[in-house]
Length: 177
Image (tube, rainbow, N blue to C red; front, side, top):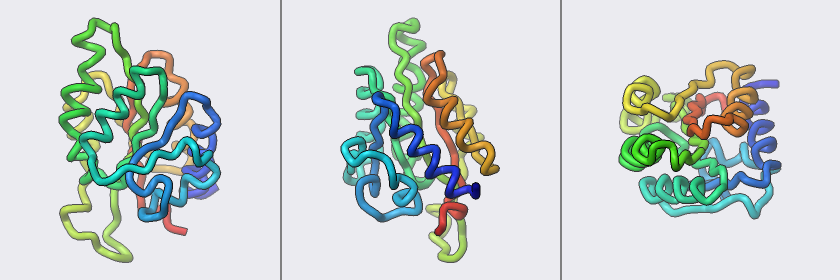
């Protein structure tokens, strides 16, 4: 399978788990290169949100504490930057300052944008993978460079028994139809 097909398959696999819920912008409706990859995920698992990146991550943490495994979707790193406070100061540190009492597991899906066929300009072309690896102590950041990396990484993020959250970084240019 190609890159897009692997992502679509991984999303369907995640959608089969009764604990998962998907949230973000253009999740229930088209609008980003990631939207179409959710075909086959049950509609009742898709929560469409307005543009409120920080609140989205706070909601994701709350859902995880309540027993869900949220898949929180940010189509580009540059959008995820707006949720950095919730990620670095709350989701990442909650297991530390609760002495392991809370271990919310959130799967964060983001992407590295491409400059072709339409250049979204520098405010949308960031890749902050290494920076988030440095800032996070309990969240693992995995870049999905090859199609064969995708399904195992998403399965790992879902099934991991350590209660850790995972940021999975996709290449959005490879999601084009």
